[in-house]
Length: 79
Image (cartoon, rainbow, N blue to C red):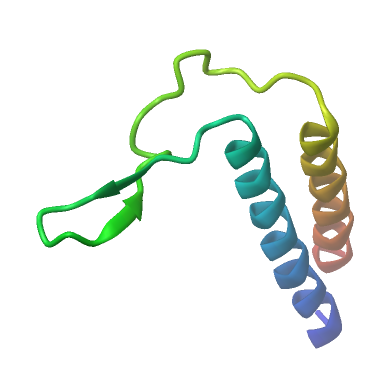
């Protein structure tokens, strides 16, 4: 297994997570709430979205492309 292949997987993972966060914010899943200490945290992952579905759009397409790129990178290290 090559270091460059492992680095590519790490980069693609980060890219996929970034695209997912963008898609969630665009869909209104970004909920910042203050805790007892007054610090704000994103609670979007703690509560289910009422629709529980992402509609089609450029952000959904970007997530799908990032997933495909990650899959390709994972295939390189699976060999």
